[in-house]
Length: 197
Image 1 (cartoon, rainbow, N blue to C red):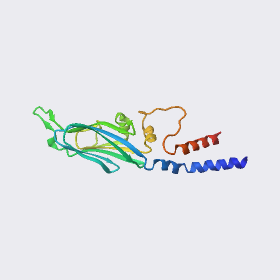
Image 2: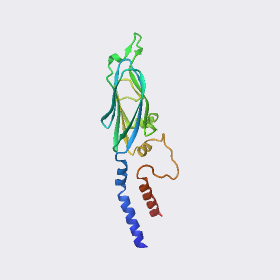
Image 3: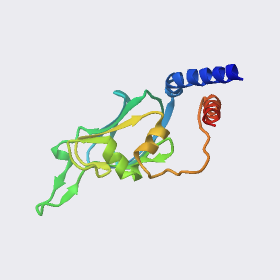
Image 4: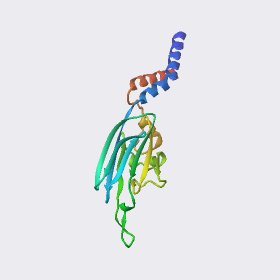
């Protein structure tokens, strides 16, 4: 009985020591799906670029007022950066009349920002805590001058996002782990629960 208990303890300790490697293996190359909706009002063409971890995933010149939805499934690392960039807007893009009123302009409204089905655009707290808007000013969910929104994203996204905000989340009773490798992880949790008893 004592040898059986010692073997069980050694097995549990070995499992605990390997948990970091196991968790790291779960997040390697885990894809995320990002949806970006744009609503452009254009008097003269402007350029818009979407980057992920420094790589351009979409670059476009927007020539007409229009709405568009871009969906990307991307491989991730532990720490990632999504950049939304409006550029090439010059002084001729904004036309002002004699009364100082804007009569023509080019700008882009961000109509959707969704990561793995979570509505990030509706989560002002998350955006404020995890993004940088350049030039420095408050982010009003759009681009009225040449500017960049850089959003930091960590993986596994669902776990990290739930630590960052209370919006879009629900908490229940007994939970089982979701995702790849969950059977191994649930077995480990059961073993640790037995050890506690």
